[in-house]
Image (cartoon, rainbow, N blue to C red; front, top):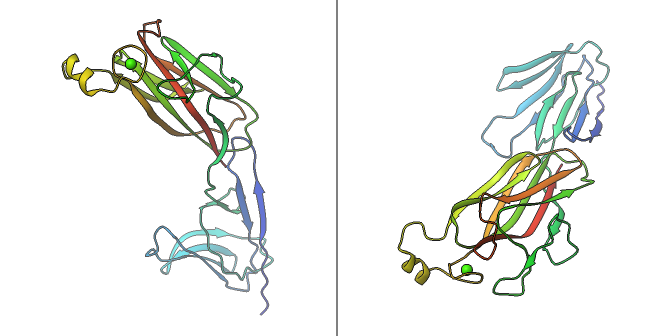
Length: 256
Ligand SMILES: [Ca+2]
């Protein structure tokens, strides 16, 4: 009995589609060949076996048939040991697709020290030489990222500074039309203002203590080649000398 491996690995990458690698299997109906799929995440789970028997292609675990496919045009047998780490999918055309979870890669880092990419040019420092975007009060600031390579997820990180007289208003982040992050701040929510001033840290601006470097870390499904980020506040005050905010170190990571 002869058996040979025929594994046609086809990777497809396009916007709004997964980056998939398909393993095409055309077993010889005369052979019975097993492929075992094991889970690194659940090592106690019995392997999922892929077998070709007669004119059927079937998945079996612990002698129980899980999925059975009729294969009418079988021509070749697979004899291989394959470990799959990723998402296994059976496509409509019968192809076995393996999607791997790829790591995030940095697409953009904006420390606000270089050429301004945002629609407002306000720049400040507060207690150090670290430049940030702001100070802003009422309103928002946005940046359009272009020419993103193929991806399925976007991770956005940033640091948000809250200065002075916040009384429960929020800073938010929108990706496209969707709010994907928001965080409120109150410079003195429970204690007397005297206590807040005594134990808070007033770094700059007005006399109220400030809250610095609140981390934004959000991951969203996204697959189009442009990404519009909007940081905004719900402040009604337009005078940044009274209450304000700033953003710094905005990163955009992409995952295929
Ligand atoms: Ca202050």
